[in-house]
Amino acid sequence: MKCANHLEKEAIGVCNHCGKSICSDCLVQLKGENYCKECIVAKMGQEKKVEHSPSLAAILSFIMGGLGQVYNGQIGKGILIFFTSWLIIPWIIGIIDAYKTAKRIKQGQIILKSRPGCLIAAIVVPVIFLFGIVFLALLAAIAIPNLLRARLMANESNAQATLKTFSTAIEAYRAANNGNYPVNESCLTSAQVPYLHQSYDNKAVSGYTFIEDFIPNGYKIIAKPEKCGVTGSKVFSLETSGVLNSRDCKEESGAR
Image 1: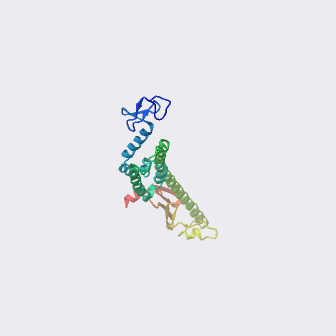
Image 2: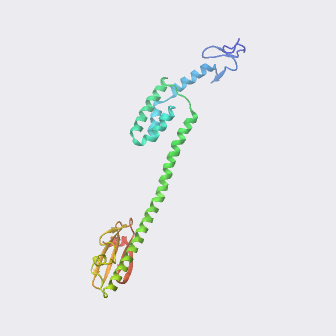
Image 3: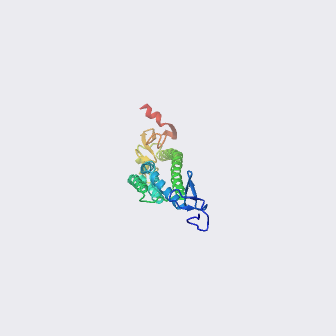
């Protein structure tokens, strides 16, 4: 008996599905049964049709936007939904679409094509993307506190430098006015040649608020952080003769 597909070859069996005689080149065994190549392709297609689950496609899309489309073999659509799922509406549409498409595949209305390379790429890209987000989050968790600390220290340095500028201006005024201290800040800023080039009284500059107290025989200038522990951690005070002191701003808050 000759093979139905290769008349020059002897048949070694019969296809259990269509009954054709088949040679060794055409024979495919599955679970102990003989099939020709055409029938095995049809059988595998039927198994895919039965096994494809709309519920699983919807669940996968719910867990991760676009994953249900990847399960359905729609790699490009899955990647598009994945990158837009943060908008919520595409994520919801993706769940519905994954379910309906999987249902059509199960009913045989759509032929599911196996694309292992694209499938791997579709899984790897989201994984890399998620790892990138985690990495950036960790980097931010490390960098942001350092940046805030650097800003805080810069504010403190600027506050101390401003108080030293005050001391220089006040002492220069005193030397030029027969040993008399200024009675207010305007004496320093409104002179023909200003001793101080800007006003600081009750104003916030670089995270610190300056409070001035001029007395007949001296002065006291206080620099307080606008937000304790955020814009500065210390309260600085400058007293007569340029004595600069500091204390933790939390101590002052606790005292109140």
